Length: 222
Image (tube, rainbow, N blue to C red; front, side, top):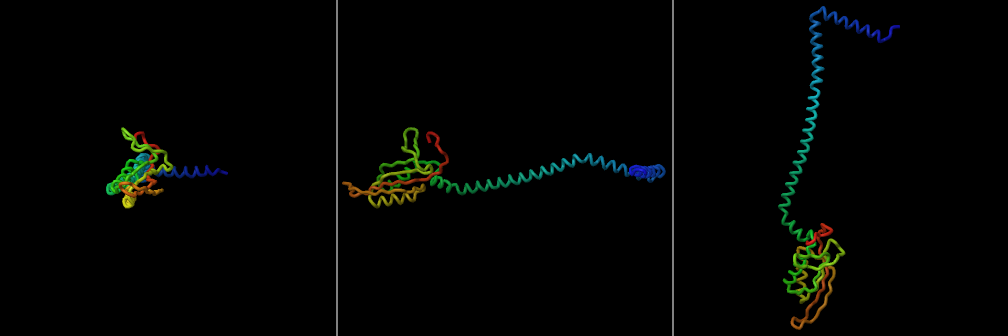
């Protein structure tokens, strides 16, 4: 029995031989076959020749798409940054007030000036003024002597004032309305007789003023 591959070989052999005879005998078949074979050859070579170009074009299209997305994201960030800058410029004065009310440093000197200004306005006398949490110095002398604080995000202050009832009430009201808040924690009230001014009230006050603790330790000289 003849194997299957041999049958197929004989069948296709006779088929191609028949085509070859037709190719030799008929001019129209010869021309048609040459055109078909030439077209197939050109198509094959064209595919191999154009493939790198097509791959390059495809890669460039992807890169352009990715860069367009990056550009759009950058433009959005630039837009958001500009809006933030415009908002900052429109609110800069309020931000300055906020920094006064909640400073990024303890700034005990400004706290002292705030209390001192209220005392002078209301004609009360401040004695034994102290602020705890740090030592503030300038080039020549210490401004405030201090000690460790139980709360690192607030200044603890204490002072005594003396004056008449009306002036002390005015002084306390002015401290309540200052830009930098003071939370009073302790009041101790007393009185004594002054030979020139008469009966005076002595008030011992303790309180705290918050600040933003941006650093664990201030640089030397600050």
